[in-house]
Image (cartoon, rainbow, N blue to C red; front, side, top):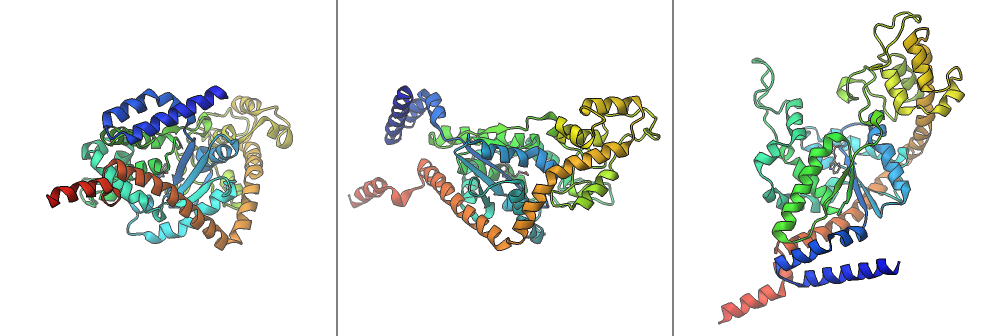
Length: 413
Ligand code: TRP
């Protein structure tokens, strides 16, 4: 303990000296010398978020929401920021602001009903933290067009959204082009992350290029203007079954446009219907036929959601999922029995979420108040970083008495 205190003291002391020192190289050397110590004592801060373009579904739940609740309740983090990325959603929905507007509350309700607790996590709306746009404007000078063009997620999304210049066949050519705001959203995402000095960003694999780009911006900023920004780490989902949950039709991904989602806000009746019509093994026609488990959506979901205790409770014929799969492969086990188990497993999970949602749905004003307060708090944090950034970039003219005094003396001569 004593040693830790000494270290901490030493580190703070060194940083103070470094800060006082005007010389960039000395400041850099100091910071480099104490990198490990700084890391040990640095606050652990999480930032993550979602674009409000629709209700959240089971894919979001396994991929990120349940993890956030765990992280929130782990007590291992000093601060957790969860952002509703409305400004980012507008980068490819500029002509549909109502879609974004209507979905803010949906995403907030989904967060709260999953157990994100506003007394432990700060939930906020991106566009209300205007400091973020200013940061992005400065970071833009540190990133090249060519680097953005190489960002694999942006590349794929440009194709997917039909923004590419030569998209589609001759007749359907949609020469829409790519909105500049959309093209540069990785830079805005770097602002989201660095504004809160986030050390940890829990996101899906598709966000890896964004975190990489953020780290590059941090490096570049710190090397040009002096040690100011914190380099974040990505935190990927750990459970392989949860990396990407397929849609109910067996397609690679749950997506609203494919109509293959189970929403967290679905009623028990919806869930039952969706599971009952789920894609299984198309060659498993008769119960006695041997069946395939791989690529069978019902089993993929059971992999992701079922636990051994579910079998004793809902399907005591099998000791565990392995035993059930074994029987299915051998033949003699029908889809309906597996689907009924899946419904029971999903309901056990979804029912408490639905109950909490019902409560918040009766208190919409209160939910907006949570977002407003969260956004205010987020603004304070981002403003502190912006202040440091402006100092580091030497665009703090009015606060810089020395600058003013020096120039005044020079011109009075
Ligand atoms: N791009 C993320 C998504 O599409 C949302 C997002 C915006 C985000 N800013 C972020 C995620 C910062 C993590 C950190 O889901």
